[in-house]
Length: 336
Image: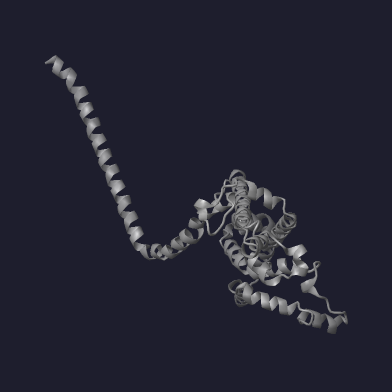
């Protein structure tokens, strides 16, 4: 009897612990099942959005990822009639060839200069414009300006290039205006190495500034109003509020735009330059993409063109990866 009394306590405690464990498992299972049901319902509610993603996924797969296998040409002396299997493997010979080309250094320097100013100005100009629009109290005026600056973004370079070439032509609007107002002689902007690079950079910033302006303006409108109220209590004026409240609050969006821009550091606007440039300004606007175009489409040096493309991709990946790591370590902000 004494033995039974001494063993009943531990047995009951073990039984209670066992029952609590089973109840906990049951509750955990119910919670998991509930989460799965919610996830299924969420997927079902957004099924149309997932279906809309299918064309984009297929397009990216077939036109972005599958062609990556063609980079094997960069390590071959590729001959179209021989194909990938029969073309001889030459290792890094194609890279040595493109790096020793006389036009490579000029194209690389032009690409870096044009890309740098495009990236900086495509963020700086929309940032200033969005800050100015944020101070506008008339909503109709703000919407009108947003619409006007956003319209060029939807036009292709085939249309905009014709407009720009007509404006800066020898007998175009700019020269005629300067002639009537100041009596100056016409300037050949489109065949001048002094002006043509500026026209390329400025027109690209003009075309894309509407998109970045809308993004930055949306980020500004999402700033917590209580921060402005606290700044006003501390005696901060509008300029101080912009410096210490608005700019720090939209810094993540600026960081995103910067990282996305660095991914195109070696692109410099191939379509724009191909349509607008001419041999007389090749010295200042010839970029890596136009060099690749001449190698592949004109000279039929497909392996050299592939090697140049691989070089551009690696450099862009390094820039994007480095900038992302810096942003993550400095501000603990995840872009992706």
